[in-house]
Length: 196
Image 1 (cartoon, rainbow, N blue to C red):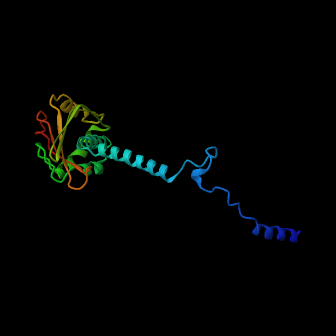
Image 2: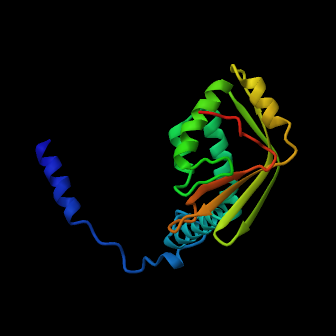
Image 3: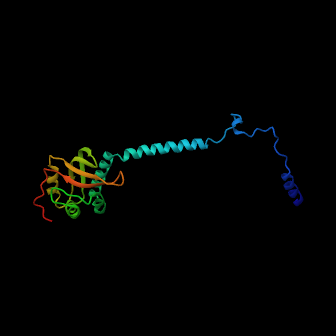
């Protein structure tokens, strides 16, 4: 039996070559024989299509109006969640508002106010976005719902305002998604009796 295996191995080495009449060119193979549909050309076009779709998506995503809208919505979500570290990431170093808040004071006061509101829900209606040079303005009527100890007082103060809030955003120098909040305005909101 060992001889037979050895003999078959040796005979396999001396198998005759395919005849020279066999056509080895794939382009001339009959259409009835199916080959794999994945070729370099198909892969290239598929990759190109994915790159174009991704490019269009990112182009639309990074438009200033879209970034201003997303930044404002994410800021309000983080305020609702009382995630003050994330809120701090949205607020620019040059933040100033008409109530005397700079960045540091705003980030100290927000947790105090929203702690008094308890679990919070912030709704924005009538949103409008405008852009001027490297600044963007998000305007909307904001209503607040809460269940904390001062919720009724704060809700009555904010929800009854006729004037909308305006959030001013400034574009950073590096990336199309780098926008920072630099001011909040509402001419009808008075906070003169607030003492920290």
